[in-house]
Structure formats: C-alpha cells, structure tokens
Length: 361
Image (cartoon, rainbow, N blue to C red; front, side):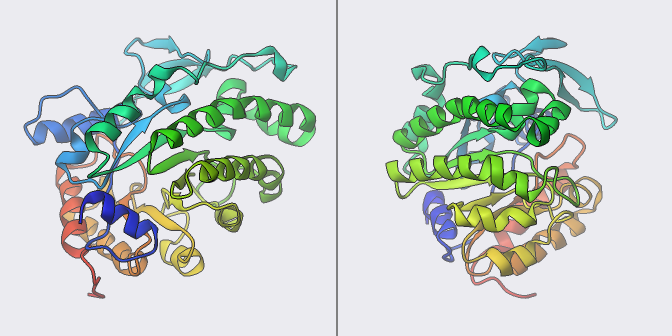
C-alpha cells in the first residue's frame, strides 16, 4: 500500500497492511534526529507551511502544511517578537536544555467591541503555497493534511488573555458570541481554501483539557464552541464529502467526545494516555473516531528505557489498533531531551509490531 492508501484505510475503520505512523517534534528535537540521519537541513515540519525532509525519511504516512496562529510558535529568532495577530512572544530556556516561546502580550486584553479589531488576511493566495507544494509533489503517494490548530478557544485567549476569556464565557456572553463569530472568519477562509485545494485532512484544534479535567464545562463547550465547529465541519464536507477532519485537544475531554462524534469528527488527537485511557476510548468511540497519538510523551518517551518505549507502543497497538482506527504517534511534540534511542525504538516497534493482523503478544 502507499502511505496515503494506508492512512485512508485506517481512518475508514479498515485494517491496512500496517498501522499508519506519525510523530511531531519541537524544532530542536527534529534537527537532532536529522543530524543523526546525516541530513543537514534547516527545514522542519512542525508549524511550517511546506514541511521538511524528516517525515519522508522516517516513513510517516502523511505530510502536514501549517497555517494560522500556530505558526507563530518559534516564528522569529529574536528574543522577543510580535506576530501578525499582534501577540507578543518571548523565548525561554527550559531545564532540559531546550528553548520555547511563550506569549507575553495579549493585544485585545482591553477590547470592548469585537467589531473594533481586524484579522489577518487569509484570502491571500500565497498563504497556501505550502499546501500546493505538498499536494503537487507528494499528494499521490502521501496523505496531505492542512494544519490549522489554535483555532477558536485558544486564539481567543491568545489575543485577550486566559482569565479574560474565562470570565467572558460566564459573565459577558453576548460579547463572547460576537467575538468568536469574528474569529471564525480566519478558519472558515483557511479551511475552505485548503479543502478546495484537495487536502485529505483538515486538522483544527483547541486545548479544552487539563490533565484530569476540562478547562471549561461541557455546557459552555456546547453553548459556544460545538455549534461553530459543526458549521465548519458541515461546510467543508459539503465541498468535499471525502475530506476527513481531525481535532486536537490536550488532556481530559471525555465528556465532550460524544459531541464531536455527533457533529462529524473523524480523528481525535493526541489521546494522552495519562489523561484518557486509549483502550476505553477505542471501546466507546472506535466505531466513529480514529485515534491519532496514544504513546505517552510525559513519562515513557523522555524518561523510560527503550524496552519501556517498545512495551508502550505494543500496548497501544494491541488495545487500540485492531480493526483500524489508529494512527500511532507520540501524544504531543517530541522534546529535545527525549533520547534518540527511544525515538528510534518508537519507529522500529511501530513498524514491526503494527502489521496486521495485530497479535496479542
């Protein structure tokens, strides 16, 4: 099977020749693996428009082109910078020796009227050059995904601040509805254009989960976000009934998974096993959802031995992979402190033990 055939079979709840594979990285971790492979390249896939060489070298089954707010991460080497949304970012060092960016300025913190701000122009033809490039060069062999995460909830608080948005959801509801309607403009435009160009999957997302609970109540999710996602999903699937939709949320969001099924979600990412049991998700929602992720990035990958990684991958293959509906991947970006041996063990185990029929041993 081609990687694209393999991916689409799994999403359609069929068993391909093996479970599709993916991993995503911080730029530093991606560069570390490229150097190990003897590749000198400044191109990385994560949060970039046209991807880099690593996914093909490591036999991923799809390639991602990113647009939107998520591309502001790692966007500028300056110690502090301002992105096109007006959000201020600053670089920080972490204890493991890596670097990351955090928001330090929220430009709409004092906004009173949602009509008073403007969005970046997502009708620009050049924003989708990366998507066109991937489709043109790789679209016959690989699945092509349009990544547009940090879609509504996250963008709302990136621009306004988390506490302001949480207060607005409860005590400033008319403002919040009008504000989210304005923010819908960018993802409506971007998603519609990418579906029209021919991507196989649209990937959006907002983090609604903490480690063991939701950040907002299911009732607030249903009031403010579910109807807007439903509108987007319906529009995109009307343009191309074959397009698949993936949604990213970290953490525990079990109470709203039925809502996502109801509005037509196809793929759930990243399925953090320390927040939600992947085997239970498979039992409860495996007829409707494909699970992308499931491999622990909080403990096993950074701190375990290669055998621990192999055991983790085999567990997810055995308990989630049968019958299709699994894209095996670490449950978030691989960080710079993850040992190379563990990264390579993830790939080797997934390819060796992910072949169908999957065995119980």
